[in-house]
Length: 265
Length: 151
Image (cartoon, rainbow over the protein chains, first blue to last red):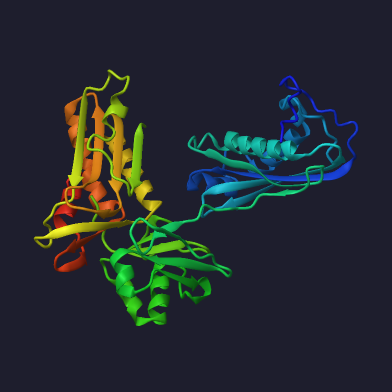
C-alpha cells in the first residue's frame, strides 16, 4: 500500500493517468449540518433572509464538484457526466443530510468531486443560515461508495459502534441484539434485571399502541405481567443512553434501558 | 475544557490525577479532591465487599456532562473524575474527583457539586455483599436533597 500522490522521493506529484483504461466511475459522498430546530424550521419553510436555501446550496455543490481540480492541488480536471446533490431534512436529528453523486467515463475516480460537492453544499447551507444560527456544525463528511477503477468498488459499511450494557457480572459488557424489522431493543439493568430475570428484550414498533416509552411499557406489560414493574415511579428510563420520560418517542433500532435509581459514588 | 473522566475495573491510586494535572503549570492556585472509599458497614453492619454495575457509554457521557456543568458554573482549570466498577473490597477507593482552580472556594464548591450529581445521576448501581447475603443498595433521599441544593 502506498500513497499515489507521492513520488519515489516522497514529493507531492500528480499521477499520470494517460495509460489507464477509461472506465465508468461513480462516487457517492455524504455529510450533514446540524442546526437548531428553529433554524431547520425556517430553512424548510423558506423563511430565511437569503431566500431559497436548498436550491442555492444544490447549485453551489454542483459548481464545486466541477471545480474540484482548482481547489485540491493534485486533482485532475474531469469532464463529469453527472453531478447530483440531494438534501434530506431530518427533524429528529435536527440536521440536513447532504448526499452527492458524481459520475464520469474516465481514467480517475470521482470521490474528491463528490466530497467537494458535499463540503461546499454544507458550507453554503451554513452561509445561508448563519444570520439566525451560529452554532451550526458540519459533520461526518465521508465517502459512502465508489465504483470503477483498478482498486475496485468500495462501500462504506455503517458499522455503528455497538451500544452495550452491563450484563451479568458488573463491568462486563454485552452487545445488543440487532433488529431485522422495525423494533426497539430493551435492556434491564441492575436490580431490575435480577427481579425480572431478563436482561434484554426486543419489541416490534408495530406492537406499540403509541410509539413512545408509555406505549413500550404497555406492550411489555401485555407480553408478561412481570413487566408491570416498569410503570413503578422509581423505575428510570434512557433512550440511546439519554434519560427519557414516558412521553419520549421511540424510533427503529433505539436502545431503551430501564433501571432503578442510581447508587454510585 | 480540561475535563477527563474514566470508568474502570482496575484500582486507581489515592493521588490519581494530581501529578498529571499540575505538571508544568503554575497558574493553578487550588486543588481540591474527594476520594470515596468502600465502608465495611452500610445497610448491614458487616459488609464484606460490593459489586458495582454501570451502563457503559451512558456512564462516561453522564460524568463528562457533570464535569461540563461544573465548568460552566465555576472558573476551573481542570476536572478529573474516576470511578471503579466490578468487585471492590472494604477500604478500596471507589470514586475520586479532582478539581483545580485559581482559588479555593471555586475548587471546593465544584468538587462538592460534582459528587452530588455523580451520586444522583451517573448510572452506577451498588450491590453489597455481607455475612447475611447480598442485596442492592437503596437510593438515599439525602443524596437527592444534596443535589437539590445547587438549584
